[in-house]
Length: 202
Image 1 (cartoon, rainbow, N blue to C red):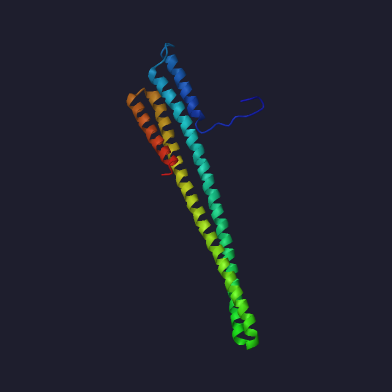
Image 2 (cartoon, rainbow, N blue to C red):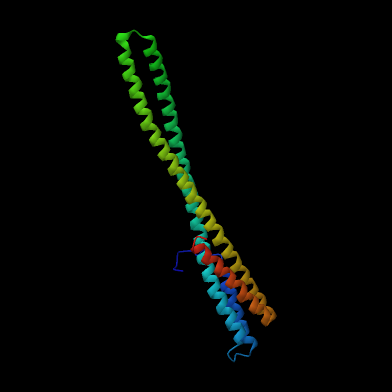
């Protein structure tokens, strides 16, 4: 980092540092003659998986933010639709009063009130169309929000599984158990598959 600035550790930075430190210790334990292939392999694996995990974590945060934004848009559209339905109700009330006035008024005034009734009916039709459109848009925003939240959960699952794989890598480094290395690779593959599902919106 340049002087005068500061550095914020990401969720996987410590795992990378641990892998480098473990690899360095592996070299020392082997007397400096190139170190063990297992240590180098696991250190490289940890660095790669930690990087992929950081990307998955970022995508999870981005989709969560999108879900909140889309849900907010849906709420706005619902409010606008509610306002339109209130407006529709007000026109319906005026139309009912105009119809009552028409029925009670003398013949020479009926035509004027009928014109008002027709105008209110036309306005109600237009208002209803706007309200229906806003409600449909609200439903679409809700669906998009739900889709983003589902994708967010997938990214979070993938990130968690990769973190487990990194933890398995640390245990494999400490115990030198070959079967733990296989488990580590298997768990990492599961995490990558879940990340692929997130990418495909499944």
